[in-house]
Length: 153
Image (cartoon, rainbow, N blue to C red; front, side):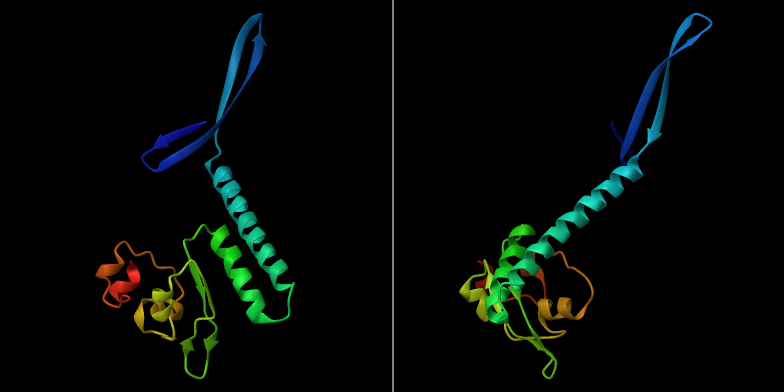
């Protein structure tokens, strides 16, 4: 059973059993908060989904020894399984500290022209690549280091 609280959703388990005491019938209820179990269950399901994606990607990688043949298939699997509208894959060139576009999935040719090379720390993508976080952007057109407007159509 789910219950909405000020702190969020609380999952409860309610157990009952009949009890007889001195020829009187009673019903006994126990209520247990199992929110942490539901959260753990969701974490396990998410980990299983992620492992499934990795398994598919590794199966694709195992089909060929040529990286340029493998990467588009891996990117396609990841894009589909993550339910993303598109994705890009960049090898990192340590000598120039740049990312060069290797392959893309669901990305327009106009946008692809502006996605390579990417210098670490420059543009939004370069900043994200240099950091250790995921960035959510509500309105890309308001970002100071955004891509050119013609790529966002």
